[in-house]
Image 1 (tube, rainbow, N blue to C red):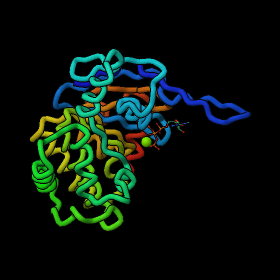
Image 2 (cartoon, rainbow, N blue to C red):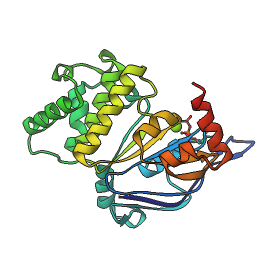
Image 3 (cartoon, rainbow, N blue to C red):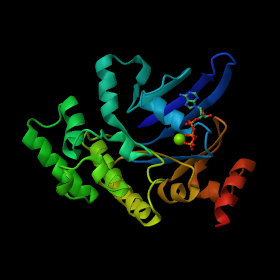
Image 4 (tube, rainbow, N blue to C red):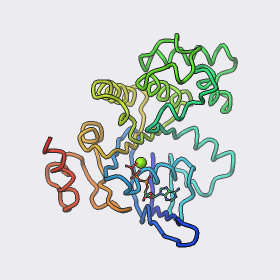
Length: 255
Ligand SMILES: Nc1ncnc2c1ncn2[C@@H]1O[C@H](COP(=O)(O)OP(=O)(O)OP(=O)(O)O)[C@@H](O)[C@H]1O
Ligand SMILES: [Mg+2]
């Protein structure tokens, strides 16, 4: 469903004293339809940069992305719009992804209008009602503004919003790190459940190896822009081959 080959990205920071940061130094991976791949690594190792490149928010230096069998750099503008619909991302700070000036209902409607989902406003509203039910929130949130909802509700709204476009791939970038532990567990169960129901393919980014090992069948361990180890989650957790992986695993088993 998603294949990435030799992705690279550097940033130059500073004006007078320029400093180069090689954020992603040539990573490759693939996820089959309905599969779940985790990327684990410390802060600043390049995880979000990969996600941002996949979503077209950042231009890579080089690398090829295939989505659903199609090479992405050879696409026309209209094909790029389709790709954006097929692949949705859920960010770390859900509140920041919602427009503070808009009600929850109009934020939900927006992507559906842009991508011409459903024929009428009534049809869209009906679809949003179904999705709210699916993610376990009430339609009484429709008329509220982002500052009038909780972090857990905001995260559920973002999941529902991503699902309005019927994506095939969901990219989760630390989706639960802002939530308390009990809501985190609910959210993870919800995402797993939705994955089965809708045959979603997941790319799950987190520094939390425990969450990833519960959610993902396969995992990539990332350090300073490269994948140091890739494979089945269970094997990597129980038989870490690389010293960095061992360090990461040990830091979790101490709890
Ligand atoms: N737009 C940018 N301009 C300059 N440097 C950037 C930019 N975006 C990211 N970086 C740098 O690239 C590196 C990788 O950043 P990235 O956000 O991908 O890390 P991450 O693994 O997601 O970290 P975290 O776990 O803290 O979210 C970091 O050193 C970061 O400072
Ligand atoms: Mg990040």
